[in-house]
Amino acid sequence: MILITAISLTELRNSEVSATELLKLIPEKSRVKLEKITNPDSNARSLLGELLARYSIIKYSGIGSADIHFGEGEKGKPYMPDHPEIHFNITHSAEMVACAVAGTEIGIDIEHYRKVNFRVAERFFSAAEYEDLFALEESQRQDYFFTLWTLKESFLKAIGSGLTRNLNSFTVVKTSGGYRLEGDDLSASFTVGTYMLPGHYHFAVCSPEQFLPQHVQMVSIPEILELLVFSE
Image 1 (tube, rainbow, N blue to C red):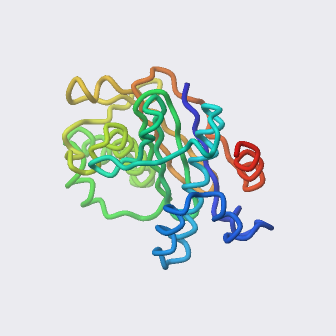
Image 2 (image 1 turned 30 degrees about the vertical axis):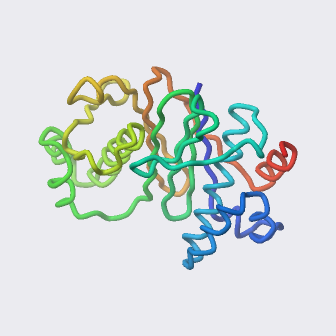
Image 3 (image 1 turned 90 degrees about the vertical axis):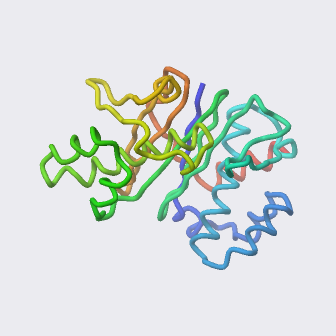
């Protein structure tokens, strides 16, 4: 089973509960990290990422908030040292933060729609992806660029390699029912899926599990508060 959740920064801005009060729901180690982030939006995304991850892990597994401790892998991927059977991943872009929790490796990526320089595609996409991109009408290329980019990033995040593995070392192939990965046995063993979130956000998930959720669950601050406080 895979659980995918997301929350908008608007939730935090409109919340009757202050950020100071929400900070009390996360460990001191995380609070110290947040204090070092001076950009308001970056700070808000990091706070919501921590809260959403805790909410999603509790929702997925039923473990108590006090039993959730995060570590960081060699390549920066977060994990739970006390619960290696639970995998999770966090992503954010502009006004949106998302999290996925699963029983196997999981990677997600989100990107807000914006104009891009297609030289990026020439550098980071495989020859087949680049050809597919420019076979489309010009009006469709921006959207397809972000579909490819988020799918590729989600795979790298699932295997925990970050950008230490070249993005053009594997290929996203469009199929009649969605997309698949090609390039080697590792990439071919993963399933990928795409979603669109409100506000024109491209979102992708990658997992060894064959069946992915059909929807992303949008979460509110009151829902997070209720679950985190109740599970203490």
